[in-house]
Length: 69
Image (cartoon, rainbow, N blue to C red; front, side):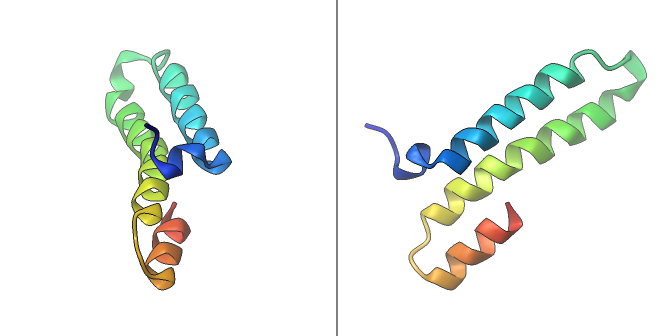
C-alpha cells in the first residue's frame, strides 16, 4: 500500500528531479566529489521534506516542512 504523499504530483516530480541530479553528477570529474554529494543530498531533501511534512498533523507544521522543501 502506498503512502499518501507518494500520490502527490509534487512529490513524484521531486523524486524525478533527484534522480536527474544523481545522473548528472555521476559525470562530474573526480575532484568534485564533495560538490556532487552536496547536490545529491540537496535534491533528495526536497522529496524527504515533502514526505515529512505530509505526516504532520497541524497546518503550521505542514507549512513549515513544505516551505523548506
